[in-house]
Length: 387
Ligand code: BMA
Image (cartoon, rainbow, N blue to C red; front, side, top):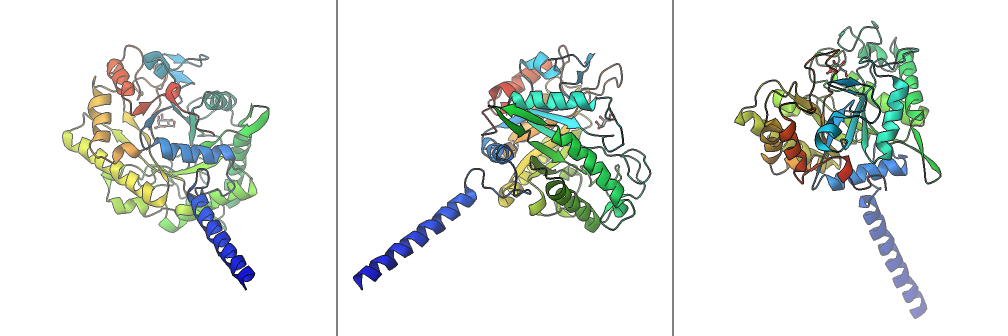
């Protein structure tokens, strides 16, 4: 009897220990449920490390940083952020517009796709974070993202342009499959935060407000995730949901077309300034960021300001007095993992269309102060995010 009683106690102990272990394991580093349950080790590490780092820091990001700046195009090693602040940005945004078109060599802003792959690998090797947006051409009309001809309704499974959309995703997969780097003798895929169908709460893109029902938006999103992870076997993607800024609408609307927690890893929004910010606008942005961080915490996601800026930055103290002030306006707002500022288009192509400083720009000194704040990280301050 005693023998059996001992065995019974042992079994109970064993089961309890196993239950405790699996409980801990669920919340342990790298075990957070992701949209892709088969995400690579580096991708899981990125997710978990960003969540951790977000508790004390915000990574500064810049779109197209290595491809061009206000006064230059395509000069190896150059970056407007590095020229002003001494380090590359911590997050690199890249844009895939035109990638879906057969034979396209460049994106809609003339960035060569082969070079872009090189810059993505370069940023990753230095420890930076990569995020991709896609101003996708309209798969029905062949027009740009801003051509609002009905499209999503035909792209979903069963729709007339569904096979065409799959071909676009096949080209995306070919691009992603080229993002391989060898580290310590092992080949790894560069983890990428993919941000499809962004700013859909606004009406300017064909996937936006007024051009698609909530159901069909969710359908196309879920199909995209399922196709990429199951058919194309891509396991280095985190998926970012990024409507336009909720200061422009009722917060409830943020969720109207949300495809579901199983299909999203990062909750973001895009927020632009179009004039000198008033104190109530600073407060509103702070509130919205704080709200976003709380939503992300509840759902075990990452929060981020996925895109933004003030074109031409015509305010010499903008970085501290508006960006930092907004982040400090709500105690939770500093919990965003990163803030990505939009591109510095070359003056020769798109004069005045820049969102980060370059040497001599009126906000350059203030930008240095901003990135010197212990909260804000550039690439040279990053811990290893991939382990
Ligand atoms: C927009 C502008 C456009 C650009 C597009 C994609 O916001 O910067 O000039 O073509 O993003 O990068």
